[in-house]
Length: 334
Image (tube, rainbow, N blue to C red):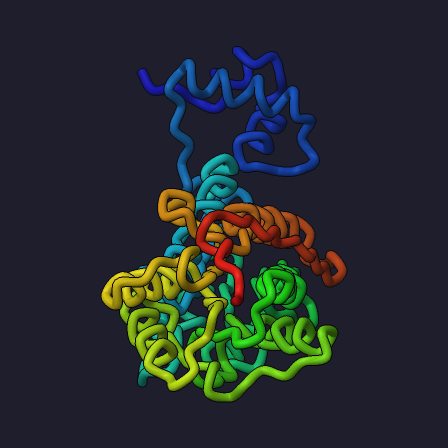
């Protein structure tokens, strides 16, 4: 005999309506009641019907994630944070990856997706990107990372302060020829690094210095790109004594390039990455740590709140970064 919602409510000691709201993740439900209902559902092996819930509430019970990348660690960590919250709210996630926005690609089918989901989470696109311009004209709840548009919720990180802290740390070590490995040539549709460039300039400006053009090279946010960029920097007539990479993955490539030349990060060249991935600790890489899982979970909570109350005012949340220093940045300028 199948378990019904009424059975769950009876075991939890609440009304059927309260049990339904708790299982659907309504924030108005008291946390103690939600816990009793979830425990009862787990004990009984209750599996709710998405179709029935959709008919009863007018909701699909799912949200769409629009992301430019799936293979990069930062995006994987954000998706993990989103999934954790949605899973707890019994909401499914549908992931649509556009692919590298600098390559030719079709615009996401927002209108078709909107018929299957209750809202959208957008990762790292600017508000005027062609990939989401149509989405923002639809009357659907949206939460965005790194950008903001009227009628949405958004999460941001203090990239400017994070980048400045990395460069200031290197300047404090006596370095003046500091190389910068950024992602790519300016791409106005993706929010990834503009604030990091500003933070670098802030740090140099406060020190009364300027950044040499020949020390700024692209690394495409990939390990292979980091290898190419560091190789170019170290082949200069006057190579840098320190390097700041705009991602840990590019910093991993920089470490590989240094090893190929018989050099070591932290002994011969100071090196700092950006993101705070787990592998960085194993490589003793200094890095600016970014709370990507928290970004994802915050976006998911923002979107669920906006789905339940579409008239909520615009919301913006700024999360901090943290410089974590390790052996790789200990080299001092001589």
